[in-house]
Length: 297
Image (cartoon, rainbow, N blue to C red; front, top):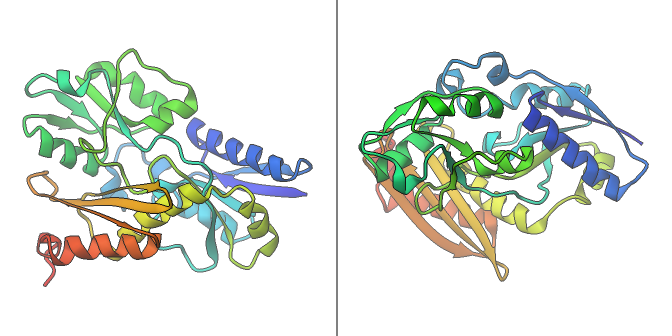
């Protein structure tokens, strides 16, 4: 059986696609995986800030299109890059085991950052949430693949990179400080992989069911449910982190102003991940002032 897998071409994206291929071979050792490498908007423009390119979706739309138009049977993404709503014709068929969801500082430990330290990151979430903890920090833009960003680390006091990316590429910088979610709440679904296929492709859907990690799926569904309830019009820094403990999902969701001056947090527990995600979002919007922060009536 031949499976065509759409993926971006970066070393991290290729690692992720290879990992899914290895998992598929544990389901069916005779599977022949062919990689369809796709360049996305985010890959072609490595200087413009992500939010100016269009925010979520700039690293996935072209990869999804390869599946929808039949060039590929499935697509492998970093789950954090997916918009909250899956396009018509596709289904999020599998969430394999999740990596470390945390962000890490590279170049300096958080407690050792000097006053007015220069921290580089291309993420509005990372800037806002770190600024909330340390208003004295100065932030610089940072784009490019993991190797490019690490090569620029010496130009700043620290840079911020997802710990899962370092782990997957086997990279161990001299100074790396994984940040507790209490300091920097992760991006929705950070550290997880997402595998999409066409919704009418029952053969591939059934195959992908064999690589699903139920615990990772419940956590990701809760976080994505939170994001979906905030709505497409939300352009503020959003973060969420879910844990599954004895069958119960604990979700912390957050919404911040761009400068980090206001940070709204809510933690709830529940059994149904989707219901929980929506509930945490509604608490933030209706009871914690999130609607006003977004300028909604």
